[in-house]
Length: 381
Ligand SMILES: Cc1cc2nc3c(=O)[nH]c(=O)nc-3n(C[C@H](O)[C@H](O)[C@H](O)COP(=O)(O)OP(=O)(O)OC[C@H]3O[C@@H](n4cnc5c(N)ncnc54)[C@H](O)[C@@H]3O)c2cc1C
Image (cartoon, rainbow, N blue to C red):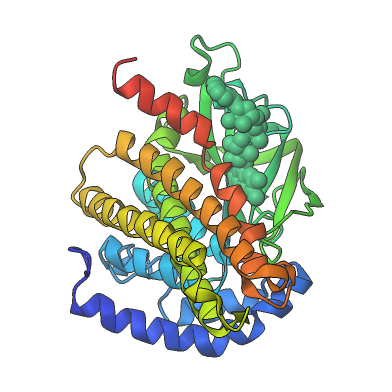
């Protein structure tokens, strides 16, 4: 069944995007995994075709598309591989901070180049000592005349190497009570004095995605780079994290569907004890269970996307989708690898890569435990 938010225009768009990816991404993906980075020219090609930031206003280089188009982009990128997650992060997670809270000057300066792929963005919240407990971040931004002086360190930052513009969560008032009221968002540009990249991190999966540490030592950031108002950073993050979690849930659902598809193909083609392994009842039951989980996940997700597009309050349901769909996908990865036998453990089979890539979806964008904390609180516990 096609989701309510998908219309003919979205299907046409999906077809042309898939064609583009078949030419520009699928043939190179394994090489990018080996290189541990996606080349910048792929971003430019995405921008040229209108696949970056399609939802932003035309005057800033977008096409004022509805969020259904963003969903299609996230789905098709995930079909290529989870390592393209940084593009969805740019489109649907970082750029929206500028469109929602940026000044006219900031929008004019950055958005057209974000849509063209010339500016790659990142969001830096996590620090070596603080992840889930965001209010406890230690990076400070002290206002001195016409600029902020930023000191601190961030880690696990997606697009950390490529990024030209980073939305950094920092404390403009380290003494604020409660602590989250001291957090502000600053847009820090590539050439800011005192900004340096730390290590490019070696990860279990998402090999072509560049994840890095960022270091700010007396980093000078113009006052005009404040996003929104001082002290409101935590509020902005809480608002925009909903779409971030939804994007992670979408990717996990697509990964689950892809793993299931490739495993069904595999079990039909492999024989043991004189018959196709798809004829064993264990294989059939495992696949029946996974197909049920995937189908139920898809129904919940599509309904949730529709509600999100209508502007409804989806905090509880997004938290549910984020933990449940990433957990589904993780279980499906294990079962699908098992059904591939020894070949499932070989890098030449895509299930091996999918198995490595999926666990992080339970960790980033707020861990699944934090999702359950939110759900419990919102249902009155
Ligand atoms: C590949 C990758 C990419 C990432 N990209 C980004 C990025 O672009 N920008 C960014 O800012 N961050 C990013 N992160 C960071 C990510 O969001 C954090 O790792 C995550 O929020 C968890 O924080 P932590 O690692 O400090 O774990 P911790 O907060 O130390 O948690 C450790 C464990 O304790 C559990 N725990 C913590 N608090 C509670 C609680 N109250 N109740 C129950 N259990 C709890 C957690 O669920 C977890 O299991 C990325 C991480 C990875 C791995």
